[in-house]
Length: 150
Image 1 (cartoon, one colour):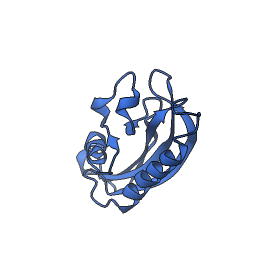
Image 2 (cartoon, rainbow, N blue to C red):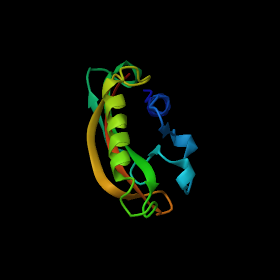
Image 3 (tube, helix red, strand yellow):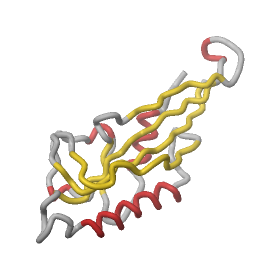
């Protein structure tokens, strides 16, 4: 059985969204700076979750067919909390860019490795941390992935 998780994440990183960088799992950094933003990164705390296999045929070994489902959670870092004249000066732009990400995911129909990619949830809308704990205005975006494997 072959699970194409790295192919799926690379394909997601190639989605083009004006003014937003999307990183793949091999591009994560331990700390992000204001100049890196706005950026969508794999959330290093719980990136892959809800992993489940659903048998779709009889057979053993390579002859058995499976549905592979899992959730990928990305973290959107828009701007450092506390930048600008007030803490929430950049909030409205963050909301617009987060909406652009959601739109691009909904409209994308060419994710290599996946049979289906759907938006599952937008969570933690507000201050979110980068891998080092520095707070950014942003949110987490959870994507449901379905692969066929055999």
